[in-house]
Length: 73
Length: 138
Image (cartoon, chains in turn cyan, green):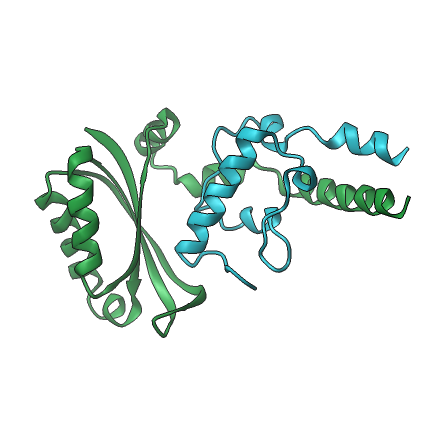
């Protein structure tokens, strides 16, 4: 049962919302894509498609460089 | 010509004293290298996620500009040499969405934030965590 539920919700959230690219300046939303330590969620864990996971990775790394997000919390 | 977006992290000591001059100098650096400034936006003072060269707080400035791709290397070098800019990040910004945003004056942050409903995602995450836990237990 649990596996079925996981499959249902595993479609990429950004595809569902129609977001083209994830913005590195969106400091309210980006922490939700990381663990409490500030590590990136895996593709399996976040449920993102390849394109959006790539975009998330880039934007989090940019946000870290600009000290908007921590490298290690 | 191509559209770029630069985010600058500025030393608070200088930003609080003479903000207008700081903005002017940054504009000068951009214009010296043949770029055309479209929009300037102050983000205000923020706490940094980690210390940079002893700085705990800084002021952010966001600038949209048009320039030739050959000028970017020189612009980056000039920003690195200036002592009151702690960090700078210049990113290509070719999306048509953003051009329309400039016309309406709506900020990028607001738009993406509005697009993404927060509550739904918290639920989703919680659900995902639960299901992962269940799978792990099984």
